[in-house]
Amino acid sequence: EAPGLAKCPAVLEYLPYRKDDITAVRDHRRHVWTASHGIAVARADLRGCGDSDGHCSDEYSPQELLDGRQLIAWLAGQSWTNGRIGLYGKSWGGFNGLQLAEMGCPGLAAVVSIYSSDDRFNSDIHYTGGCVIGTEALTWSSFMLAINSLPPSPAVRPAGDPGNDWLQAWRDRLNWDGHRPWIDRWLRHQTPDDYWRRGSVRFGLNQLTVPVLLIGGWHDLYSDALLRLADRLPNTASCALLGPWSHDWPDTAAPGPRLAFTDECLRWWRLHLVGEAGVSQQLAPISRFRVFQRLDNNVRNATVWRGRWLAADSYRELLAPAGRAAQFRLTGGQQLESGSAEPGPDCWSVDLSSRVECGFAYPEFLSFGDKDDAPDQAISNRMATVWRVDSLGEDLDLFGSAEASLNLQLVQANPSANPTASPTIGVRLSERDPDTGRETLVTWGVANLNLMQDTNGFATNSTRQFSAGRVIVRLRAATHRFARGRGVVLALSSGLWPLAWRCPGTSGSVLRVRVSAEQPEP
Image (cartoon, rainbow, N blue to C red; front, side):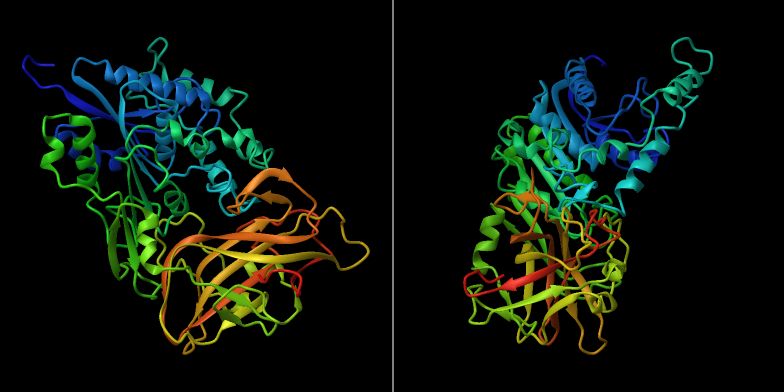
């Protein structure tokens, strides 16, 4: 606030992850650099976390968003700022950045949202395809319980300081009735009801009017959400950037190539926060959609992917040169037949008699860059029902979203079968190396068949007792080149436990894939 000192914009990162210990090193690495380039950075602990008072009751609570709105207003009102505030964050900070932007906050001028989602039920850490994510939901809930059980810092809140004593604040936090695992609440909402709708910005995108820079990674959980949002953000200055990365920061994440991440953010802040005359003319224009396409298939132990960066004004425009999406039809001989998905002349049915162990070779759902995060599916596929392309005649590129459209029937295999069973279907797509026999997982999906779907294959809040019908199983977005001479393996199973918890009551029931002359081909 020295006389004559120019006012600067400010960027807020707003998280539960304890600014004075858990994130201190990473914050210093990026925030100090940003501040040295004329952008002030504020880092705040959520209410009830780290050194803040109060209690943290859940993810993205109304109180969290109200506090965030007040923080933005406070920063915008400081005499040393120019009144233009940016929101910045990865994962949790990416989520609440989108939510606060949708909420509308005076002073908020731009957002950088990294590894976030627009749909908290269908595309987050708790449920996938309507099934509980067994490998992550409990772990995540336990982690948040643990860090919210830690004391405030005595260096920030000295002992004996009235109203600020760290020990008294810690006791208050631990003795609060709501200090319990959040998974209890999550399991009470097993459909995409109003609980999950809160914080899911896809239901109010038209209100998200500030420019947003979305950053995602193919190796991360949230790449599907970025592809959905890329063409739908209402502000025409919004951009999306999708690299190969896992859930770590793009300047340190594996697999590479990595991104000059702080430079990318600084450019964004200069465009939308600095407000200098002519600054937008000084910077080269940014393509609205930039994405890394992988051009190899060496999934195992790959630290850097071979590929190329593509740029276009939209995701749809980027896909247009490829023409129609590749389609494969399931045949009665359990082959994958390339070409039209129109009905074939044969009528057949196959029971999906999979063992519970067929899901044991599961990928890490929320990856931080494990080099061997594409497990060999060869043994698991022997416990499932598979369709194959034995040898590709040419390279086949998977680039973006994929889905399996299946005509299924639930068959009661014995009289003791539960008539109110909640069946699930698991789908895995792998590439087979004919020389080694390894079947490398490329992408996968799962669906709870008792949750009705919308036209895009998303689970809805409407339930049914599934008996028969067409089901869409959305597979996780991926970029992968199936090499000429390699095989393609599609494995169907009645679930993917333990990655996705099996729904109750399915013992004694069998799922059947059906094709008849009267019904469309899957």
